Length: 282
Image (cartoon, rainbow, N blue to C red; front, side, top):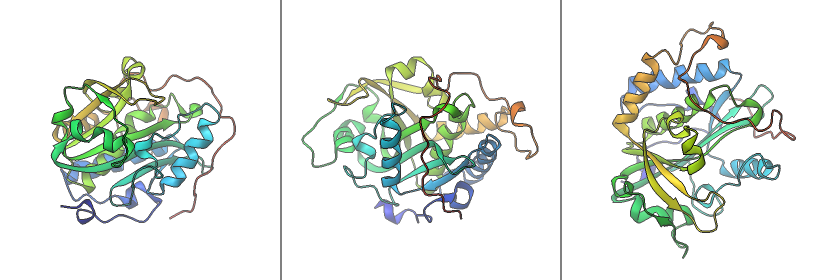
């Protein structure tokens, strides 16, 4: 079934709760988690918005990459290299009170029914008509099949790191995807250095498979971090029951305790300039 028959895209740049409709998966669990996570992120001074204007994400990445504060977008999430539509992709922008985008997560949803990551990795990254090929040795690649959510462009601006945002935003985009599409697997690529820092588990992935390389890419060798949909549902259920997200709106943000682990190592405490995305309010 074509992906555009499975879902109705919300208006661009709505707040996450306004853009969220749970059609698939355990709808009550996903709804509770997204609302609670959105509140927890807002207590940290961030508003999450669902967007599908990938040219804006491209401009954002170029702005910060020019200042050595982020990588350029890879081909697989660049709207000038692959087809990204409101029916098959979205990104979540976290904006501060000044309308500056300081957190991002992007997702492409791919219908790999009858095929898998092992067969589709090169076309996903470089585009279906490219002669470029990736080098994939990950044993888990044949498992990642059906309707899959590929996460990319996970970024927190340097002066917002250390607030445990990745624990929350690393799960909200997967929850949004699982509610809108009948997701079988979610996965992402993660550099070997970030694996050693514990970022895979921070983002909610418990399984790793080595490795994948894209010749000429800045990322170097990467692992495939992946999670079956049922395992993800169990993860967010545990995440909530553990007290990692507190629902009361009057809780002091400093009292919210999330699981221990590494988020991002702070290399700079203030950005060199700021970037404003589209800040029209809904």
